[in-house]
Length: 71
Image (tube, rainbow, N blue to C red; front, side):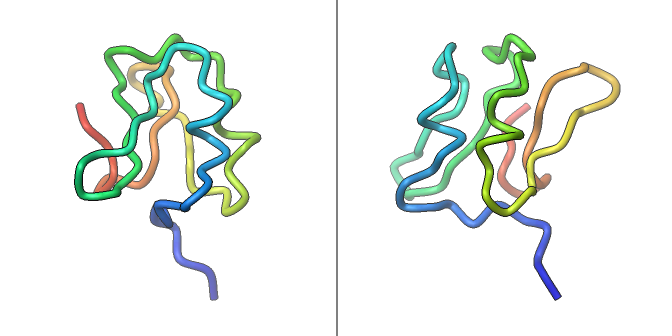
């Protein structure tokens, strides 16, 4: 059984492919998506090896599991 929350990868593929810098690593080493900076390109969805990034249907922007996302 796989968990559906962000794994906060050491080499986060989603962070590396984000063209706007919307995905950041915090001072606590967590990986978060800043939805207000995201342009909605969805490159991060394909880059996540665990498949935990999904589309926030109301804003049409990618988001990771609720515990790892900033609004």
